[in-house]
Image (cartoon, rainbow, N blue to C red; front, side):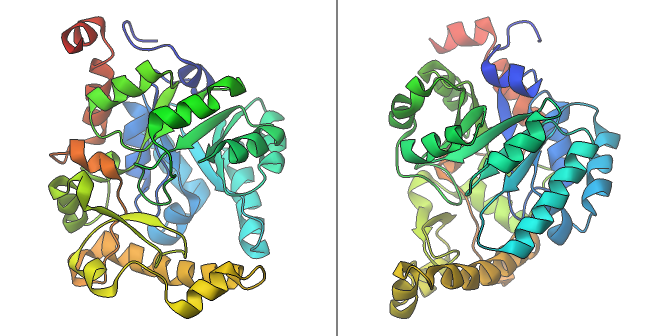
Length: 335
């Protein structure tokens, strides 16, 4: 642990110096970004769909590419939703590859994480799980996870509905490390989250606006220009609200699902098909907009952390600036 930096449950679980995660992002988690965040003392999280289908790397080759840049710890994102068997089978194989390549920190989401926990714990690894409510948190703990990624209403993508402090207060008695996800765009917000009692933070939007991220310059410029009030929720990506930057395209097409889709999304048997339709369509749109810019129908996922982002920086510099805010002199100046 570097002198003056925070020693938290997250840094101990993940084996890192700075309690800061570069969250897994579709389509923005390219291996160079993951490596840069880890090399600077935080931890980059691999998003396997982004690694393979967007950036064109076989997962094992992609992990080895990251290892060629940095020997420091990296994490892996496992979406464990049960409805798509083909996808779930693919995820099981990906997890095996990650474990074989030495990854020991996993973040699960959407489904029952028990089977991931069993595989990871068997080799001494750690599993955290994305949650937005206490109900989700309790289910994850029943599945054996070691910590919780607390996704609040300020997050990009599939955001929660609760403010960061209220979500911490709701979950703090559960006895596991809590990581704040959402609204952290600058070092002062990072320090404030730790003061609330969080063991660390997870950033997404801030790392899109970095030199290593392969997102299109239009996307990065949109993040730098945007303010918190420019973030809106659209149902047209996955059928449930997703936080994006309000662009001309968003204003034109609206943010609400149509009446037929609304009925399908409420139907116990049809809702999975409706979400699948949205997901297939949106994965393509997100990829095109992210990598090829504003000439395409654009859904630029981002959270309210845009308020604290005013320039594109190297990912390592982002981590170093956040780390510097933890040193005693910086904390005294902030007080």
